[in-house]
Length: 137
Image (cartoon, rainbow, N blue to C red; front, side, top):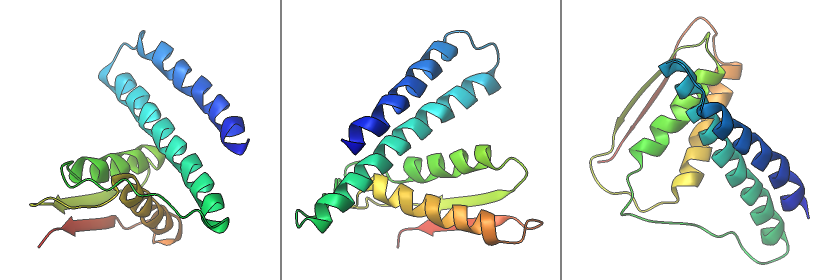
C-alpha cells in the first residue's frame, strides 16, 4: 500500500516534468527538467528500497540488480550532477576512472554515493569543495 501511496504523486511529478520539457526555451531549462526526471527515477528507486527493507524484515531478503555489462560511471556522474543542482552554492569536484566493468547494483551504488555526498554537503565546511574520487584497479 505504501508503494502505491508514494508512487502516485511521483508519477504526477514525472508527467508534469515531461509536459514542461515540451516548452523549454534554453539548454539550462532542459537540463533542469532532465535532472528532475532523473530525481524522479531515483525517488522511485528509494521507494523500492523501503519496500525491500520491509520484505527483508519479514524474511524475504533484499534483491540486487547486478550487471557487469552496464557502465558504472554514468550513474556516479548523474548522482553528482543531481547534487550539484540541488546545492548550487557548493562546489563538488568529481573524478571517476572506472576502467573496467564492475559487477554491482548501480542504483544501490548511486544511492550510496548520494548519501555520502549529501552528508559531506550538510556537515562539511561550506567554504571548501566536496571532493569525490572513484576508480577501479
